[in-house]
Length: 81
Image (cartoon, rainbow, N blue to C red; front, side, top):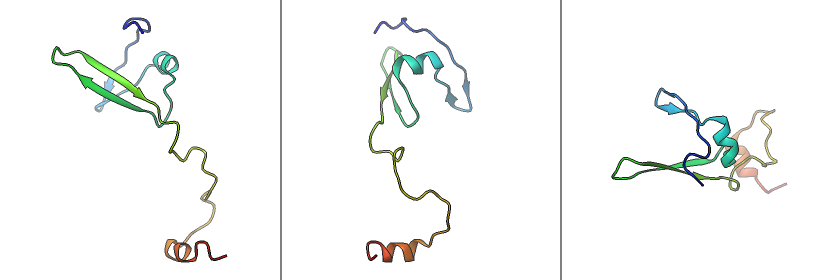
């Protein structure tokens, strides 16, 4: 990928920077993905997208948060029904 193929700019605010939408779309960056930052001796910054497509709770079909739970009781009773 050419370094100037998708040019964009963003502003740093509170030690955070937004990734411009056109960059996110081009690189298929989604919530939960990680960015790996590498700073070379010459001052060049490289950012690698580490896509997090597995191991998240995005497709978890479990507790929906609608009722109160007691972790101790629920843990001790797990699998006894």
